[in-house]
Amino acid sequence: MTDRKPTQADLNALDITDAEAVEMNRIAHPLLANAAPDADPSLVSLDSTPGGIVFVTINRPEKKNAFDAATIAALRETFETLHGADHVRVVFLRGAGGTFSAGADLEWMGEAVEWSESDNREDALGLARMLKALHDIPALTVALVEGAAMGGGAGLVAACDMAVALKGTKFAFSEVKLGLIPATIAPYVIEAVGPRRARALFCTANLFDADYAAHVGLVDAVVPDGEAMQGFADQLSRSLIACAPGAMGDAKRLVHAVAGKDIDSGLMDDTARRIARARVSEEGQEGVRAFLEKRKPRWMT
Figure (cartoon, one colour):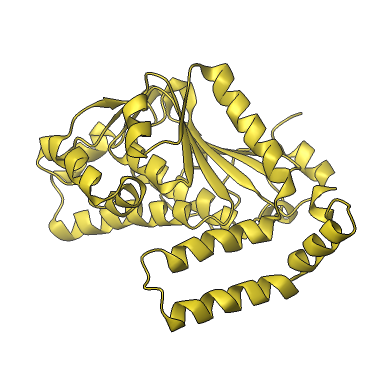
């Protein structure tokens, strides 16, 4: 199998046949027709399978996958492409070369020292929008974390729906040691670990390991080695074959809509509308009929 430049037909949000998917399994472009001028597609790679499994890889191993403006732009475009990939069930996010992400690139940070407050605000919005694009992917998102996830890298972990870390992986929210704050990643970290834990992690800036990350809820599982991590990804991918892709996206949106809301008549009405819509949807009809008829639903075949 060889790499090739995507054609116009390929640009339809990964909505491709099995044969095309095999041919295109290695995708080195975010698959957007109109790329942002500061996005470098070589910084992020995207691999997909016919079964709706996607791997997004940050590809700056020489910089320990640290962020700069171009990497952030490439990630955002990749994540936004996946908003329209209806057949995708799970997106695994990882870093090349044995490190998930060291956070902000030092050269990029050095440039920002000379910027105005307005320039810094615009730059920070780029990171905020990238994280929101990751958070809003309809498919289940899973961070595969090894080596280190520092600052914004740990924020990427928090913005995913799930995370598994290699034992010994290091994490830190070290911004206050630089006189800064972890502002753009804060919504996702607080959602993952809760306000009290977030205050402690942010204010101490302590380095912590994968076991402690699991203890506070930043990661869901710790595995001993790379083989076990691959096994985790394979097992999860197999289990999701039984799940309807559209329903998975609707279930994620349900959580976002319900979390933190008062259980009142408005919320009850909203949830009733959602399940009613699901029951009459194509997937809902197929899933229930398949269950009653003791057969597999079409999305499993």
